[in-house]
Every structure is written in structure tokens, then in C-alpha cells.
Length: 222
Image (cartoon, rainbow, N blue to C red; front, top):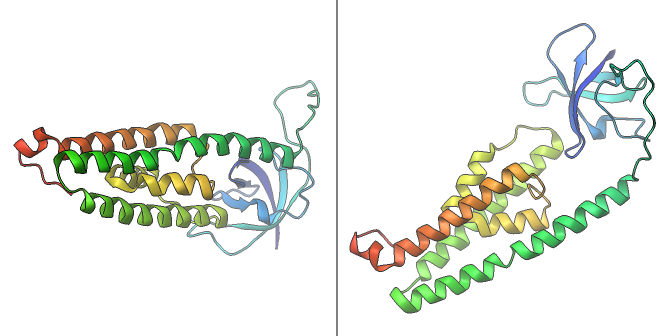
């Protein structure tokens, strides 16, 4: 059965949005892969026709979506068309920027290895700490991969606070690799600001555990 509605919201970076059905009811999830006429990217306020497909979790999900008309704008004057940057060019520019930033961020991983070496030479063995970072990083990388797959398929996502906690507990090297290789959570500035705070706190905690102050108060070392 064919339904119609208005694209209420659209996240172009992640490629999904929600449709407000004409007859009322809960918003309908729609992914970019559901569109049949994708000569232009979908935009909020566009009129759509769609078929209800397999639900995304407990939410209705659209399939075989088609854009029926231009976006509805509150202005009474026609908007001047803007020259749109071709999507491949936008993706290449974004990839270049994130790639440069990601490459520099990966330097924190050898810096961590150097820090563990210095702490080991100064205050005792850090092999268990290195093993913990490796294990935590593997778990974190796998979690990022799962969350990216969930985003692409329109499934329920991992709360960002869980990803931050994994980084705080020592999984941030794996998170950096996932951001670089999987291109996941690598461009959302609000997320990255808190993420880097967890990296700093983790490194401060590591230094404290192996310092004379930590040994004085009997703090457990990894």
C-alpha cells in the first residue's frame, strides 16, 4: 500500500530521516537506500510517497520512497538556487580533512607506548598495563564497528556515553583506529571534544597510578 507524507527531518551526513505521515501516527524511519529517485539528495520538508517495509526496531520503516515535489519553504519569495557541490567532491573534501586530522591523532598511540616505556623504566613493569590497553582497544574497535553497522542499517545505536566510557577505561587507541579506518565518529565535533577529554583523563590516571604518589596511597597498578 502506498502512503504519502512530509520528510520531517533529514540527517544528510548519516543518510536517514523521519517522515510525518499525512494521516498522522508515529514518524516513519527512512534510509537513503530506500529512495528510488536519488538524482538529488533528500531534503527536509519534501513530499514523499513510500511503502511501509520491515520495521526498524519498534519503529515503522519506509521502503520504495520517492520524492514527489520540492521542499516546502515558509518564504513567499522563490529562493535563489545555489550551485550545489557535487557529492563525490564533497565526500573527497571531507575525507581529506578527516584523514589529515586522523593521521595526526594516531600519533597518540606511539606516544602511549613511549609513556608506558618511561613509566616502566622509572617505577616498575608496565606489561600488564600494556595488555589492558590492547584488550580494551580491541573491544572498543569492535564496538565502533557494530555501531557504524547499526547506523547504516537504521538500527538502535550505542549511546555516546558508552563510547566515551570505553575510551576513559583505556580503549581510546582502538577508538582512534576506528575513527580513522571506519570513518565513524570522526567528524562530530561535540563527540570528539568529550572523547579527547577522556583520553587526557585516562593518561593522567595512568601517570598517577605509577607515580610515587599513587604508590604512597596504595593505588592498584595495572
